[in-house]
Length: 636
Image (cartoon, rainbow, N blue to C red; front, side, top):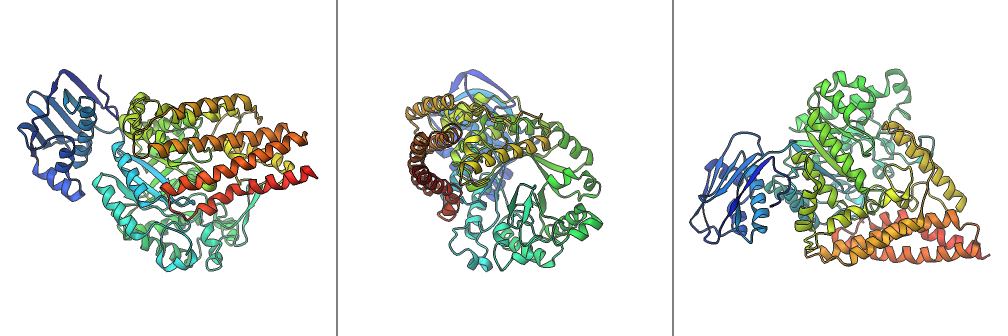
């Protein structure tokens, strides 16, 4: 039987096929035509890429009532009838016809179909603020993919020097940021695909790049840095919210960004202000509370957004951990609640937010960051839970995040399964079938006639299961390589692993995940066998898409990274008492990592701008130094 992605709400097929070879005679509702024109969507051009449009078969498009993005399609002996509630609905109807045409040699099966989304907001957030900034061509290509997945909300997360703030350009002359012209072009293109490109700028925490400069260090809550969770020292990250200069600084940044976007929304983030009320404002916080310090800043920024005609979005971590804030929380702000573990659940937060009457979206993750190639089962469970709770408890939708922590090493293609799964469940609800996303990705993303690519990508993201490590928001093979809890001796490596386990235990406790024994039962041989099998499967792939060769290369280098992390952990744990064996291992690891980095640079440059690569690679170069140093010590 024919397949349609995302899975439609109602659909029945007839036995017959409509032969479209003679071409269609088009009739398009005037109001829909005006709406298409206003968005930049050329319906007639779209149709002509699929079928002959100078024929005699009736193709009638009319305006319907109902959900804004809903549509009906009837194909029978009389021709084609589309009833769409908006130009967006018409666009999605044409995507359905494209998929069916491709399964019938250019014709169309008889059918009757009705479809509408389960959720209003079906979004993705891409991190362009941590080292890796895609080229304009890459972003155009991603928007095409997202539109075909019926994603209608995209945010490019910005922190640091990822945007070309003209008055601050002298501070980051070596960077390659997104420019105002880039945003204007992307905004127009996204609009034509019925995607809302939403401005996103952090304005409280995660300000470390700015606060590291002598020009702006004085705006920090803790100018000299702070002790993070009594584990390690971190540089200043959070603004002094009671300093009027901080407010002027961030609103000047926002002024330069917002003029390039048409969206009615703006995401100011406001998450993880770790030092808030613990430095310059310590006495104020003791007297009035940290939440008042936070809420005063929130309300001030919300007034700014209202004056700009924008609806403010922000993360809900502070508010949800201090629910007393909710009773007088501004009703026009949209709260974003993030949880990234499949074992945790959104339900308690969603119930609370529904009871307050506040607008909110739930935000799962792709699980690609901190993992090299993903954590697929975790990702799927996490996204399904977000969709389910948003539907049941009155959420506006979901926004799946794709972060770039600790160097942003993962390739964007590692997140393709997560993007498609987001599109599937946010449109069809959790009854959508994974096979639907599998078919779509193999046919339109990978263009793989063997229909193996999706499963390989998904399985590549499941290596973490074999690590048997009680870690959250990361994998063992990534974390052992990362700069988090830097080590330059085997003794410090042991300390690093202890800290990672304790951090994951804290994450589990915060998210209500049942406590586990903090023991890693790593089977190196089993994991290597799994990776070798995946490598063989990848070698046999023949992807016909324009980026097919690139996707294969990214998969291959991703596996090499995982192999490297696995061998590093295995060697330092099991070969430390055998000087000869450990020396051999470290020499092999040095060569492997150097080769990985050479390939990684080439792959990086095929999709991304050059600025940020050196900073990204600094998160892993410490290992090369460690290998040289330790080999030298072992030989003495």
